[in-house]
Structure formats: C-alpha cells, structure tokens
Length: 157
Length: 262
Image 1 (spheres, chains in turn green, cyan):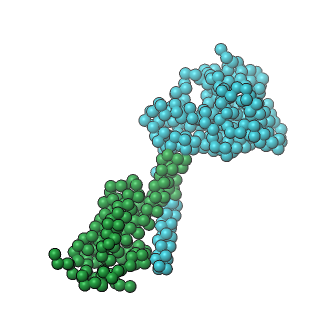
Image 2: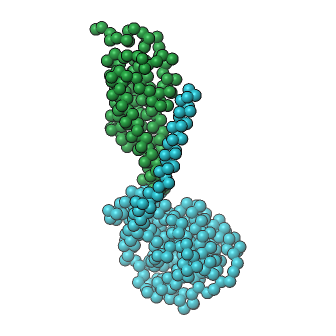
Image 3: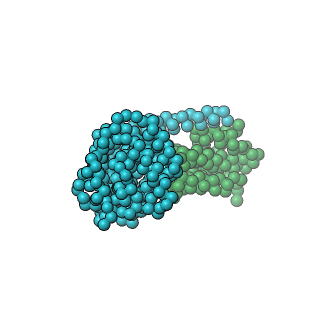
C-alpha cells in the first residue's frame, strides 16, 4: 500500500484535508442536540471532495468513518434520553453511566479531531485507530494521486 | 480489514467496559435523584387533591371506617407504603383510582354499588397494588411524558386536570392490571379478608357495564372485564384460609349513609 506518511501534500490539499476535520467540529457546535448533523456535514464535505487527491479523500473518509461510529453510540444515547423525556423510561444509574461514557468518547474524539486538523494543515499524515485502518481499506489511491508528480508540488497557474 | 475489525471489537469492548464501570456508581442515590422524583410525585398528588377538594365528603366517621379497612390491609402487608391516604369523593361515577403521592380516590357511587366491605376491600387492595408496583407514575410518564410532571412544579393547572382525567379514565397496561389483581388478592389473603369479595365485585361490575357503561368507570378503564373477573374468581378459589369480619355491620352502614345521594 502507498504510504501517506511519506507524502508531502501541497498547501491546497493540506487545507482541504484539515477542513474535513474542522467541518465536523463546526457541525457539532451547530447541531449539538441532534447527533446526525455532524455526520451529514462530513458526508457533504466528503462528496464535495471525492474527486480530489488521495490525501484529501483519505482524510475526508477517516473523518466520515469516525463520525459514523460515534453516531451509533450518540444515537442510542439520544433515543434513550427521548424515552426518558417523553416515554416510559426513568433515569437510572445505567443511563447516567452511558451519558458519561459518550461524553468521554466525544471529548476524546473532539481532541483527536483538533489535533488532526492542526497536523494535516501542516501537511502531516494522521492515522487514527480503527477509523484509519478502515479508511485504508475503503479509500484506494488512483493513478492520478500521490505517486503522480503533479501532486508532489503545487500546480503552476 | 481483519485488523480494522479487531480494532472495532476492542473499541466496542472498551466502550462497554467504560459504561459498565460508570454504571456501578450509584448516581441516583448520590445525587438524590429518587428523592427529587419522590418530591415531584408528592407535589403532583397534592395538586390533584387540591383540584378536587370541593367534592370531598367531609364525614369523619365514614373516613374512620375506610381507614380501618386500609389499616387492616396495610398491617398484614409490609411491602405497601404506609403513608397511603384515602379520599372519599362525591361523584356519580363508579370509580376508584390511585394518584401520585400515595393517594387513593374512592367515589361515593362505587361504595353504593358494593354489597359488602369485602368487595370494597377488594377494590382498595387493587389500587394499593398499583401504588406499591409504581404503576401510577409509570403511566403518567408514558402517557404525558416527564414534562408533565415538571409542569406541575410550575403550577400548571391545565396539566393537573389532564393528569386527573387520564388517571380516572385511562386503563393501565394489561399486564399491570393483572399484576395489581394478583397482588391485591394476595394482600386480602394476608389480611385474612375473604378474596371472594374482590371476585364478586369484579364480576358484578363486568355485568353492570353492559347496562350502564357511561358511569362504570372503574371497570371500563380495565381491559377485558369478563376475562379478568374470571381470572380473579379462579385465583380466589385457589386461596383458602380462615377469614375474619372486616368491619361491623354498623360501620358498614355509616359508610353507606355517608355516600347516599342527597
């Protein structure tokens, strides 16, 4: 597999890859009560960049996978909260434990996202645990990407 | 892909382990969440009582008799909350229901339809079971949401009336009714009250509902009255023991007089 660790993206690529992480953070702030909003924003950003370089696509995909994984946990917590607010369920130790756990995981993801946004903006490759592995499997390099000399240096105007 | 899958498994395991660890902490106790909900329940009950205050029958002797029946059941059944309060309300409907805060509302016309104190004790034990099994708050939250309970804290009288309406006219879930029937029968048995009274009242109500469905609230809010009457009768038959007289005929007459139509 082609190693992105040795790849030096141009400034535009680094900015777009970094923006994919920032996009998920902005969407978290906008759609805080609804766990789906940040996933949708990341998905839109991914489709907007699906014809971009491998480096950009790879990081968009990594964000997308991590957001989707988090959505499953957050979605369950959200429906549990709704069942307490408007349904038959009552607040229990299990519920409070679950809320603390998802807050903790979201916080870790938040820190990791900021770190990744900063590092990719500097042109460094960041590979997360699980999301990175799955991204490697799902996101394949094409002929026109990292091995191509066209992407190793900025295009002349 | 195998590596990604194993990492996913570890991630999920880590998540569940963290959740399990946090769940071991008794947040409900530490943050007095149960007390908060108890207080909200108490407040809700008081608001409902206030809303029906004008119709309460102010007969001390009748209340003494009602409380005597209650005490006999309570003393034999330690699981039932001891602070249950009874309220005798003048109303043409044949109804009795539990409300939040461990209150039981008994309508005058229900007592008029009872032929014996045993039948009345049957209804009361059934409602006590709803309280002990926490069916009342579960029903309010499931029907109206936790927001309704919060609204009462803000003295929302419209919500109070809505809750009262729900509690007096809406059925509990079938399994809750069955649980309350069986627990009620057991309470009677423990208190040496003949459970046949509960069975006969249920049977009578099921029959009468066909003729006067508009006033037979107590039975109409209970699903499948005929089937339930049969189930209670069958369960009551299997219970044997020596039964004592619940109240004297004179006390029963006091209750009947207090609830007579004016």
